[in-house]
Amino acid sequence: MPEGEVIATDPAGGAEVRKGGKVTVSVSLGIRMVEVPPLVDTTREAAEAALAEADLPAPEVRPEYHDTVPAGTVLFSTPAAGEVVPHSTVVELVVSAGREPVELPDVAGAAQGDAVAALERAGLVAGALTQEFSDTVAAGVVISQSPAPGAAQLYRGDAVALVVSKGPELFAVPNVFGDQVPTARQKLEGLGFRVKVNEVLGGLFGTVRAQDPEAGTMLPRNGVVTLTVV
Image (tube, rainbow, N blue to C red; front, top):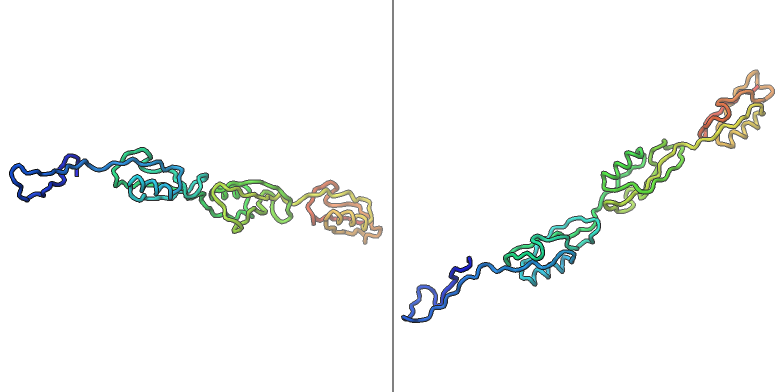
């Protein structure tokens, strides 16, 4: 009842009382008010115990992901500590659920920029970037990632390392003009090139008189060098 109103009488209403008899009147002091105790940075269990000790009911608990506060720790309360509230007030506790788990996308085979954007959309960041030559993956495309999808549980803000292709490694074509075919072939195949021989007039002398591409040209492994032999 509101403060000042009569709660009850003794004897109760309707009872007969002798003239001059004593009647005790109970008057409402209003709703009992209590102070919300400090709860932030305590564990959920400690916060619930503190509320019970303050004679407040069991709280309403709402979990919320947090990048730095350990799971189970109270982030804030509503009403806040120090507020004076009716003893029947249910305090809301927002409790850390720890770091938010995220799903790691598979970015192998994606262009570097697209891979970084995909990681950021997932709540992750691109970490260490390594470049490697590749005969099969085009330059600027992700060869691999670490960790790989499914290898580990990641959380928002974690870094993913990327290995990005520099394309095939290129080698300078040597000058084999004037060499005999076996010598020219040994030089070229030793560098990983393939050799094609075009014989002119039956290639009687077995001497290289032209090469395509010319000496100094940069080719990848398995690139073809055509020799014109007379």
